[in-house]
Amino acid sequence: MTPDYGAFQLEIYLAGTQGRLPRYPVDSESLEHRAQEVLPPWIWSYVAGGCGNERTQRANVDAFEKWGVVPRMGVGAVERDLSVELFGMTLPSPVFMAPIGVIRICSQEFHGDLAVARAADRTGIPAVQSTLSMDPVEETGAVHQETPGFFQLYMPRDRDLALSFIRRAEQSGYKGIAVTLDTWTPGWRPRDLITSNFPQLRGMCVSNYFTDPNFLAKLAKSPEEDLPTAILTWAANFGQPVTWDDLAWIREVTDLLVIPKGVCHPDDVRRAIDVGADAIYCSNHVGRQANGGLPALQHFPAWWPPRAIRRSCSIRGCATGATSSSRWRSGPPRSVSDALMHTRWPSAARTGWCITSGRCWPRPIS
Ligand SMILES: Cc1cc2nc3c(=O)[nH]c(=O)nc-3n(C[C@H](O)[C@H](O)[C@H](O)COP(=O)(O)O)c2cc1C
Image (cartoon, rainbow, N blue to C red):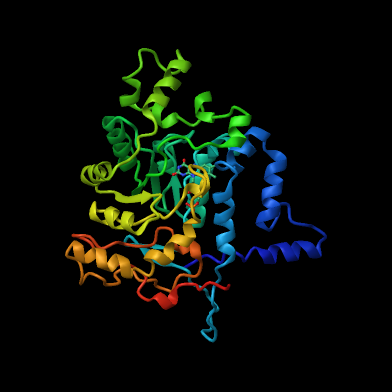
């Protein structure tokens, strides 16, 4: 059953009768302002900034303003159930936490990755842990107990190192790997450039590398003994432009769920399915990797509801596979964020997708 996430508002109102006001902001804009107040400017810039004039970043936000939810009435929803069946798991809500590299430096005790894992475990909302973390995959994996954890892979240039990361994610109990496809080269981010700030080059959030036997074997001296060389070795190994061959290889070497992240075009959706992807993570990296892209949300009508996908499935001989093995248990998706990773794509050994009717999809309000 979905926890009643808003129930604590009663505590707020009751505390108000004793003259106590909420300690934290209760709307996202105020939270953002508070974060800006307390974070050092270089961290704020890194988190808030996008590429170029940040047009794509703004477009992503604006796109959400054009969509809305059409509520249904008369169903006596005393206990609201937002749960979904996804990848054979029951999750309390159709929401995921996106991978945020360098989240570590946003938390007071500098262990943001663990904080995210703990939040996931307490709320039941799965988190995707970035390759670029302060807390290595084994440590975050150990916290993801009740709530399934996902690992985001920035494909290293060296496949042996990639394999090592994948094996470590498997051994740490992660359920799937989100393979980020859109990071071919660092995006042109004026806010970071003007502060000459690239945290990884300062040795931050590369723990997964510095704890990896395969990576360490590339170094003559340990990162503790020679940090500059270790960082340069990291830079030389980071940022493989991922090809469909790479994705097929990942599919081959692991039984974890494989979820390509950064897919927008319908043809790329088909390619991803052809190499055995379990779900599609439609995203433009919030405009941090390239400016000028259309809002990720806008891509959905092109391939959603999955009529286009159905055609592509027939290419794989799965034309009849449009069953709804992972239907929404409690009805249609309620927010556009549902669309993130909620589809179990048909492929040779798998079945169906979860959205069965286009009328379920939230409609534009303008
Ligand atoms: C500060 C920051 C760091 C991020 N780090 C990563 C990362 O390490 N790996 C990754 O795949 N995406 C990263 N992203 C992108 C997010 O995972 C996500 O794609 C983005 O916030 C846009 O949301 P959307 O994908 O739901 O559209 C980062 C975003 C921000 C704002």
